[in-house]
Amino acid sequence: RQEGTRQHKKDQWALDDVITHTEILPIDVEKVKDVPDEGQNVHGLFIEGGRWNRHEGRLDESEPKKLFVGMPVIFVTAMTMKDRKNKGLDYGPHGPYNSAVYKYPKRNDRYLVFRLDLKTEQHPFHWKLRGVTLLCQTE
Image 1: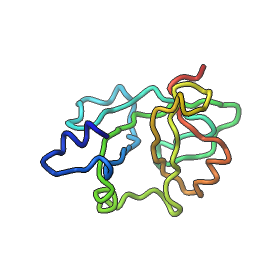
Image 2: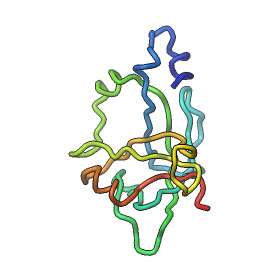
Image 3: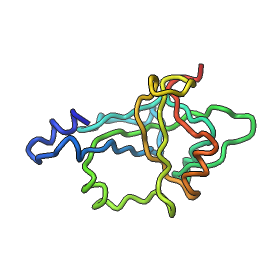
Image 4: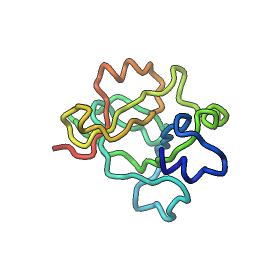
């Protein structure tokens, strides 16, 4: 967030108004060709408690006996709350599921990296009760 605020100094972004914005891209890391001007492409994350439906671009129920599923490339950048509202992002009828990204499967604030919004057709509480989260490592 701080770096995004510095890059938009001419736009007079305030650090308190800046949020982390994420987009799950429908491609794998091999197909990413260009480096974005702003933000980063993140790959190598795993989802626990659910799976990402690449065709529909939303969170789905996990497949039987699959605890961890690899995620596609995630574009992470900063934007202001005002820009987010103006963009009219569609996260489904109940809004996004705000998932945590942890370094390790042990979940506590010590290993929290950041949070991201995932599109879902079900209510976000549905996924919270299933314990859906993203992990950098599975062990």
